[in-house]
Image 1 (cartoon, rainbow, N blue to C red):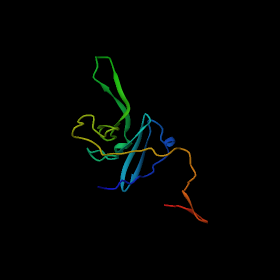
Image 2 (tube, rainbow, N blue to C red):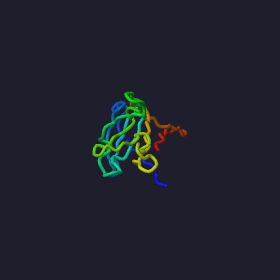
Image 3 (tube, rainbow, N blue to C red):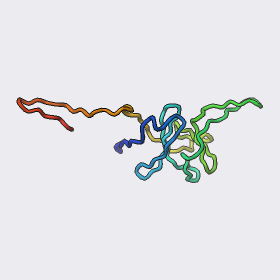
Length: 136
């Protein structure tokens, strides 16, 4: 099993809802998205022809409805490839047109810590007359 390595991307405040940032990790281009306050990451390569998928339009989609009616849903949850308009669910990486067979690689995203900087603290031990800082 491959060991997971965390990569710090940015502060939460630097990636507001509806925005994305494209970064490179270990030679792979990855888009990190803020979808209504939740964070998701996708490989920045469209499986169709290799376009930079994460540079595409962030959108929603229409559900089937009556003539003259529009049922717009999932606003901000769909990424549309800039080359040929293939659409993918940002949350799952699955394609909209064939979710069982076509998908984009997803990566886990975690929000750690807080926005505020804190002072590092370390355990202190007292052995007879010596004070020792335990630094691991």
